[in-house]
Amino acid sequence: PLFRHELITAHVTTWDFQSNPIDPKKWKGWCCMDGYKPQNRRRISLILLACGLLLGLSAGHIFVRWSHWQAWYAAYRLRTTLDDTRRLQAAERLLALGPSARARVLQSLLHGNDAVRAALIQAWHNQIPTLPLDSVQDWLTELINAWTIADESAQQAILAWLTSTLRREADVPIPACQQLARLGLHSPYVSVRYQAVTLAVHPRLGLQAELLPLLKDAEATVRRAALFAVTATEEASLLLPDEELFHWLHDPDEGVRRICYDALVSRGRTVLEIDLGRRLTNPEAAERLKLIAELRYDEVVADPEPWLQRLVRDPEAAVRVAAVRAVAELRAAQRLLCPAWVETAIQNDPDTLARQLMRYYQQLPVRLVNGSVIPAGGTPVPPR
Image 1 (tube, rainbow, N blue to C red):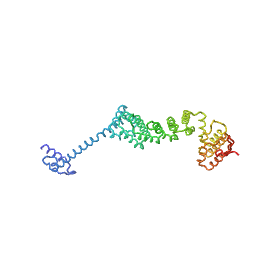
Image 2 (tube, rainbow, N blue to C red; image 1 turned 135 degrees about the vertical axis):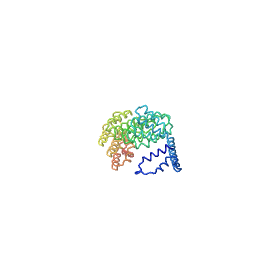
Image 3 (cartoon, one colour; image 1 turned 180 degrees about the vertical axis):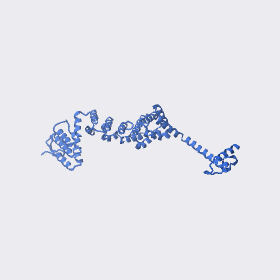
Image 4 (cartoon, rainbow, N blue to C red; image 1 turned 30 degrees about the vertical axis):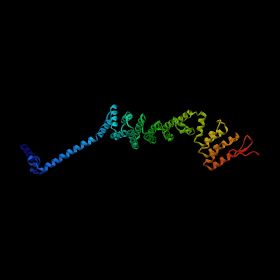
């Protein structure tokens, strides 16, 4: 007690009472056991209780969110380590934490550098064989939701993630995989569309038909990839018949033209047929009219009617009329009636004047072998 009284006396003596007036008795009452009042004891007890409660809540919070703290530390190690092996270990640790680390993984995948993304994709490739199907579905759903905010490199990383997913031998959520691939096909970035083309032809996805719009892509690299992917499939002749494939013989890119030519050769088309197909789909109507004249008079091919039948569906009315005329004249020279598809073409033609001209050429007289003279497309009339 004597020592405490001396302490208080020293403090009170050195206090500046003029600027800070204070009651020494009150000061002594706070600090000395002799003046320790009951209300002060309750106040200190409440303060200690509040501190204990705060520490308990903090400890409970840390215990409950321990996995989130682990995810934070693993993501920190993933970002900061310079060693590839340790970076991969951090990525595997982060993925192993499951749903609690999903936000950290997405953040690293969307905003991390190339090394971080490569480590995450490799870790996903290592762990996906043992993951349950529901977990794979949840991860892909998160990637689909994050696609709109991903930049070019992030979208490339997401498609690489999808590639690793499709290598899984067990079942995969096909609808989610298809949705991600479709997002890649419609991406504004050329590199992403190019990467998505290779995914679309995967046997598990079967999105070959959705590559057809990319055949008209503004970028030649995308057109080349899409055309090669479509023509290399087993259903290529159904997805892109020869009559449609001929159009890409006029593509401004040499690589696209070469792929188209090789595809036609692989389908058994001869050099003459490929040349006819190129002229058949020439964007200039005058060139297509020249082809009709050659098919009619020059005997370019043994049977010109299949080519004329394609020209009857030409977008230009003059070409359609010329094709019907050529068929009618060829049949008249052979003393044969016009084929049935001529009548169908006339009935379905949208141009009134073109239909009238086609009807005129359909009425050309044909002298049959038995002597009957009938219109080229009409009902036979017995000879007089």
